[in-house]
Length: 244
Ligand code: BV8
Ligand code: ZN
Image (cartoon, protein in one colour):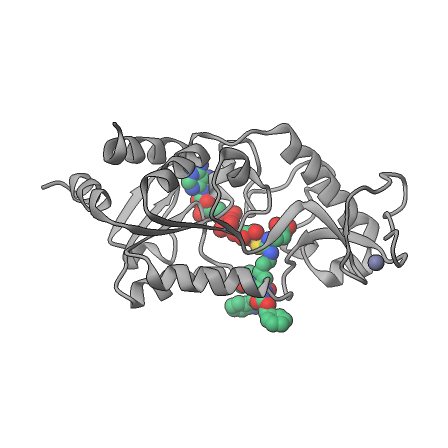
């Protein structure tokens, strides 16, 4: 039988799926991926240089403004068919976990419920001193400060060099180890420890399925590599497996 028919038949039988997504799944919503070149006043900055506690310590205003721009951008976009297909998949599979590296909140907006946000969510803002999550803040010339302790507010995301939220990471490892099929979708697989999850799944005998525009370091280890846009491939796959 052909490659895709094998995958469709396999997915019809499995009870437990884990999915890891990266910036590629939000690309068709109009959000730049982490490795896409930035434009405008951000063109001369590399995201990995901005997404760090050192950068925030050095120039809190620059980093606050970069996230304020991204937060505004996220507020203007909608989930794309790839997000909705994953929300549909969750309804069709008894045990489904979506692990995302993305901080844009689009999976939740598309209806995914069992969601692990490994790198936080840029729509949430917290105090850099006392960690209190801020409900509101003044968007004015300066970086807003915490109402509780006066500390500088920051986006509630995980920066390079910062530990991932323990509970989310532990649940993600558990889901990767327990699943029968592990999807890696729209991620270059370069950022740790998220990138290690596919290997944790594979070491426990899971079938590895990758959906990505380009091959990645994981591609050679996958059982199925579907090259292309997740917003096109996922609806087709979910339809073929679970369409009524
Ligand atoms: C930690 C939030 C320890 C912020 C992010 C050397 C070796 C190994 C590891 C390290 C090392 N040096 C440092 C490290 C650790 C470091 C790391 O991994 N660095 C990498 C760069 C080498 N990791 C960390 O620092 C992590 N923390 O290790 O802490 C620790 C422990 C205890 C105590 C103290 C410390 C923290 C990592 C989290 C960083 N924060 N995001 C923000 O977003 O602003 S990561 C950020 O980059 C994104 O969240 C995202 O996760 C990642 C980018 O990766 P992708 O999502 O894969 O996006 P990318 O653009 O790369 O790829 C998109 C893919 O989609 C492409 O392949 C493209 O072809 C494809 N695509 C595009 N369009 C489509 C598509 N596919 C399908 N359809 C499409 N339409
Ligand atoms: Zn505070």
